[in-house]
Length: 204
View 1 (cartoon, rainbow, N blue to C red):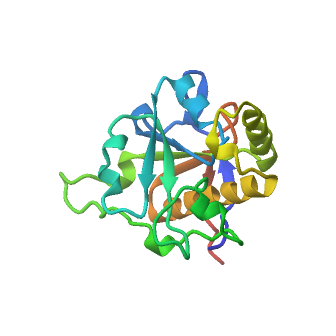
View 2: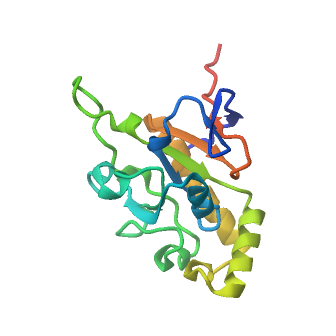
């Protein structure tokens, strides 16, 4: 899968002093990203649902999950990886203990049905995925500081290379969901401007 470039979103609105795309609703937002990206901090700032939710994208009907009924909220993505029988998070040992780290098996991500009737749900418009993707060096520094206080078990196995690999996983998942028709945007942090994927130009 070729990597799409991104561009800053021009039309903005503000929730709790943070810039968001102007064409979304507050209650659509699902915040995700790798460990140390700042998801919990953003959700607290927004006054969203504080309990973290786990969403397995390889599971049938994940889009009907009860954890998605209250938004905005933070979600951890369970993803199918090549060579692994079950979906796991990027901080699970099944992922981290593989050498090399396995790529996402996009063929095993389950997609909701398309809207066919007037009264049916358009799952691709019900949710908006915000991917928090700071630079790997920033994430590594944050998690190294957290590890000193042993507040997050996910920081026990930590390196700059692992942080970079986890960010890459989420960047690729963001692009995949965008290409499937979901509303997706990215940002490096709360104070950063949100970006959208730029569609490739057709050859003349």
